[in-house]
Image 1 (cartoon, rainbow, N blue to C red):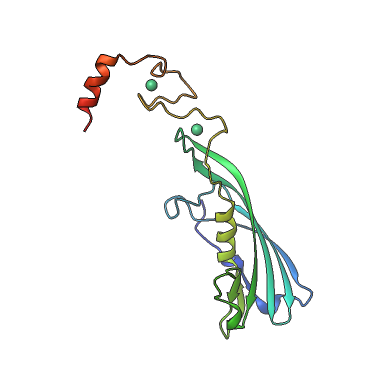
Image 2 (tube, rainbow, N blue to C red):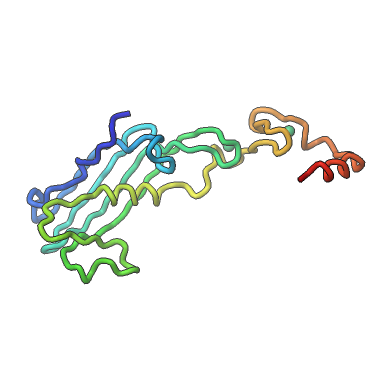
Length: 175
Ligand SMILES: [Zn+2]
Ligand SMILES: [Zn+2]
């Protein structure tokens, strides 16, 4: 993996034409060592439309990448294509930003001469993360008894009925 480099996502404002612009960038995201929730097996495809609204900029950013995940049930690694979009208004008017219900507004400090879209990229990817991470919909998971991967093998734990006499003993052994 190439080093973490998002500097292509800093767009010089002077280079944005009044009619707006559409940008396509391929960038690398930091590897698993630096970020455990966001990990990708390849580059992130970024598509970004910037619309000029006087002194403000309306940014629609779409990010797409092959996410590397670990299955919640069987712990097996798997990859899945994820795609997320955020829409953000970049403004120099402080009154518009920082309102709790408007997290989609970013304030540009005086003298700022570029739009830094790296936070938009992170937001788009975080929003696209699956809430349930399963290697497949019907993943059988691991056996709670012996830890065997039930997608690959049937261990027999589930079919063996516990002997009631031993069950009492098992209870005693538990802390
Ligand atoms: Zn699984
Ligand atoms: Zn088992």
